[in-house]
Length: 236
Ligand code: AMP
Image (tube, rainbow, N blue to C red; front, side, top):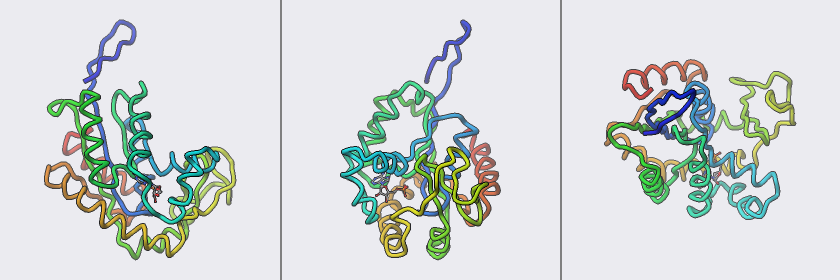
């Protein structure tokens, strides 16, 4: 629980956390960002934060670049530091939306410990997992049509094209195809996703805190059904 003081008015707010699961190319990032716009929490995409490091040429970026390129998972210690640093910032006091984290059991355990440190209250605060369900065949088809920007924006040439061809709507920079969006790397990333994320999804399912949405629809339609489900559960 958090107290916000504005104009001598104290508002008690409950913390909210949402964890997005979905294979690469499922559109989970788009859904996570749409939900973030609505809820005004902090959006944490570990993949996007890592790509920023790669593009900036930092020491961390140089270290993780080959890992991202091959579609392997970056070491837990690096991921944990990135998430901790972000979650401890003041603007994250009301909660966060995770995209691409946690990716394995160790990261999930770390998240639970971290939330405890941040005074997550099991009774009053909320945490839900959201699974964006898309089949492997559709994933492979979609990813070849995906374009990204260094600022973190992601486009799809059919479902969510940029207003000006090849340019980012947000910052105007040139769009590119990610190094790990190649067919053989996708195959590998899908394998890792099924192996590592399925047990995590089952965990949230067994807790009664999993929401699954059919991701094989237009982004707006997916978001509408997601929000409906979240409201029904009184999660938002
Ligand atoms: P994403 O944008 O979520 O598909 O992530 C792109 C790449 O970043 C992944 O293939 C991994 O190499 C790395 N990555 C992102 N998030 C994590 C994480 N939580 N744990 C380990 N590696 C990650």
